[in-house]
Amino acid sequence: MTTLGFNPSRIKTPTFQSRKPIPKFQSFSQPTKISFVVSPNPSKYYHHFIPNSISESSVSAPKESEYDEIEDDPTSELSYLDPETDPRSIKEWELDFCSRPILDVRGKKIWELVVCDTSLSLQYTKYFPNNVINSITLKEAIVSVSEDLGVPMPEKVRFFRSQMQTIITKACKELGVKPVPSKRCLSLLLWLEERYETVYMRHPGFQKGSKPLLALDNPFPMELPENLFGDKWAFVQLPFSAVKEEISTLEARFVFGAGLDLDLLGIEVDDKTLIPGLAVASSRAKPLAAWMNGLEVCSIEADTARACLILSVGISTRYVYATYKKTPVTTSEAEAWEAAKKACGGLHFLAVQDDIDSDDCVGFWLLLDLPPPPV
Image (cartoon, rainbow, N blue to C red; front, side, top):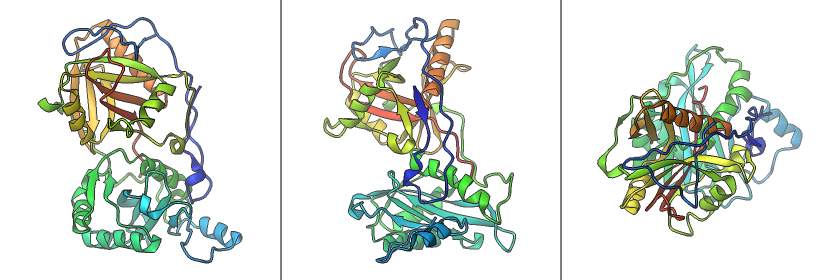
């Protein structure tokens, strides 16, 4: 059985409502393979897809009753660093700087800075009035995070709102920090979803029904650059145990790719559960994987209406990754692949190989479909 529920144990805010569990993985009938050139032979390694609150970092910790009182106040700001975490180990931050569905005393929307790392060992929030939103304010706030929590400035800062790219990029570059536009801010996205229910909705200035000021982009897919072309591709499946093994050995084998913190995401999957994925073979697999590694790969979608696969990278870049001849059989397989993703809570993967039949990957990315945050 597969379940998805954001792990609340690392959040320093009030009670969290877990996500609904997802249903069991379904099996399907024999597929028709689709490829760039010719249909690949089944791989020995893959299973080809078969359709059918505030915590101050001070010497004296607050008493439990005081801590509970602070946590229950939705107007409070958060400044927290896990005491068991080495500050020097936190080299990448995830950041959001945007308005919230909350009005201040002037009747204007409040803005908020939210910063965390992938493990939520670092958590920081701060409210701002809407008349001070610029790169200078953000730059000073980033410095405050570092100074208040005693952590070094990050090497990278990931953010997912294209509308804030200019401000965030300017602030980061002036601090010598690399800004990375990416939707692979999963810890941040899930934390914002949690904060909406436990903080924003309880705030006295909350405006029910207020739409996000800066909605996420979902542009029309573009033509794929030539350097990202593969030779063949196939829908495949891997047991979850094999997926975990691939992710755990990425660094040791110097393979390009990226994993996910499955514990934080609260994803519980049986080791035998088959996770859907896409295998791409190329005679220039290493250069291809290297190019892919710099794109912040987010997700892959089977677009049955256009008979193609959509690759989402960065913040709002979408490519037509591959096309196939539209028939009832290929449409059925694509629909079944998408259904399998949903059955796994949106979990899927991309593998780049020298050959479809190879047991080794040159690049491996674990991906997750997530709905946009409510703010």
